[in-house]
Image 1 (cartoon, rainbow, N blue to C red):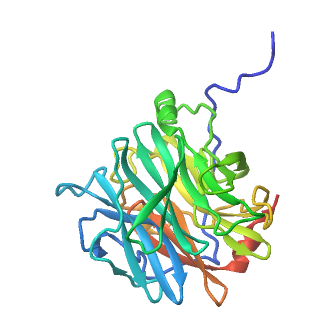
Image 2 (tube, one colour):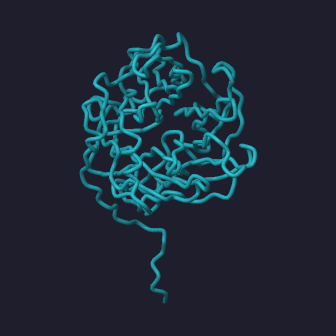
Image 3 (cartoon, rainbow, N blue to C red):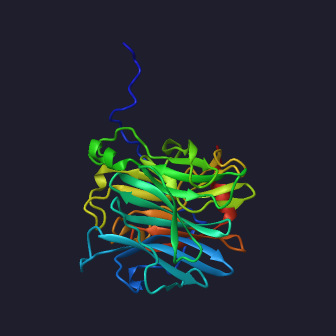
Length: 351
């Protein structure tokens, strides 16, 4: 009889402990910088936005969840994307109506937009919630009014994110496979963990449509502050030391119970950093072993839809070396933190 233990089976979740945000990260004093109260149309919560900066102006595409009736709590009924502009990246002028909503007989909604300027156009990656599970989807636009679909991946994949240029003649995409609905059913919402983690993977393509050569890039077991999943956050930032990634890491604790408006929320999301090779992004060369931002402020830990959530979605490098880090807080608001690029790179310990 073999003494080899089967891969599949219930396992004990590792304990992650408590963390603090490093002192070099500065939350903006006006946080949240964008909330439902700032939106001139039906809105319950605004979060998980993408921000780009061109010719001195910031452009933000944000996720807007809303109710179809007058409820103020519970899971929102639908999602669209809104557009806002800013001269300083703090004070936003929001367009008077949503710019994007996508539905088909198979797709109920799309969410979590990332805008990637690439070869003179704007590509938008997001997740389509289909009857068959989440599907990473890519659209392209030239003016933020007309969006054309480029690709919709097979289930089950979330958090897809393109690199902003070809590398070695190829396109690269970060993503996180996520067959969570099936796992939730099998393991009673992770309370009895089955040993499966959801990690950051990377694929490549010659044309943004045909993707392959999938490789796991960042494993949960490498991150002391995660025990269930990690994933990409912001568009990769090109530096002399490599491509800097703003990522998220998630730990799960069954004892958390109800933690926000949602009926049950036992996760905690942190922002983190990683570094991949400049010429071969399939090579992870650095990783932050502690969180870059951990939930601490009231707008991250209290009175939100899902408390204890930091979800980084954008990183803008300024001329003075600061990085503006935009993140979703408690799945309810858009918030801003800043840090020196040099500190973010120093945080990436060599692999």
